Length: 130
Image (cartoon, rainbow, N blue to C red; front, side, top):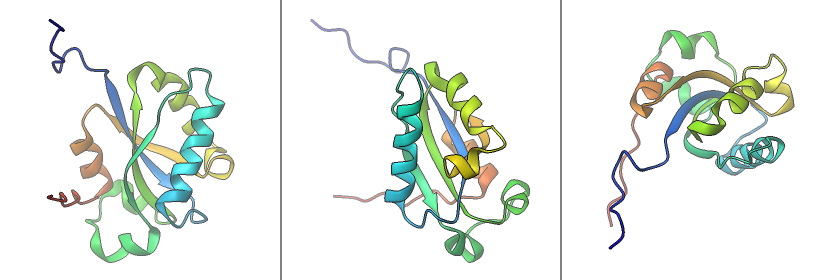
């Protein structure tokens, strides 16, 4: 019988709060930027866009936090990355030219998505019930 996949056996991941360049106006553009980043890293991690809020959306709907106020231009997003690839991803996204080169720059990271949402002031999305 196969071993049951428990939380301890799952692949570990980190959540990255990023600022998105204003040229990326929708989720597809941000996902394409993440795919380009993934291809440029040696381990080819699977980066997944979880939450995305455009610049014009975040003005009235989001809670204002110190981090979101410090970066008023562009959108905010949360990206899921595997723990094994975090050193490479972090080096790439914390570079001072990352926003111009890739269209995203890292603002915060955590092992819990809730903490990244709180730091960026992003609301928890509503679940789509079937």
